[in-house]
Image (cartoon, rainbow, N blue to C red; front, side, top):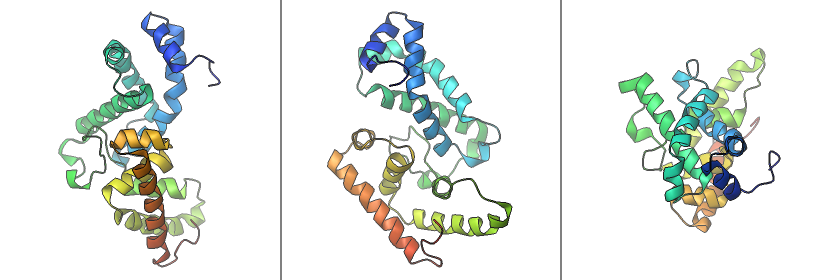
Length: 212
């Protein structure tokens, strides 16, 4: 908590009393994690039109408007509630810009009662490979991308979501369990299983795990 030594509860109390500075500290504290979520779940077709920071800024306006509502009934930890609001905003933007072109609902991975857009296999593969590739490696990277997508698509939807939450969004085991509505132990087991399954599938593919 480099921005401020106050606890989340203390910052929330101050924000509820109109302290804009404390509210700003609270928003800044969670911004990087929320941006990571948006970057992972933003439909690739919109990446030239929408920026993760802009999505978060829009969502922050709604979060500020709904703060009293949250404080009356804080069913989720603050960060998970903010994540949900940001995800709902992202889903609305998807619907606005893509309409009927949105991905088939059967391919969606989100398990948050359809509140959040799913992380596509392409997005997960891109995260695994990273973005720094020289032009001479472009063809090889494209081949690896396809191989990773194939591997990710073999995972059960809930295991793909656990992988998204733990490995890419970097949620804690407790946060992941709360998001999915399952026990912490079950969330941990699914994460380990998803990683093992992904490695096993990749090992059986041409090129295996080489270069990943």
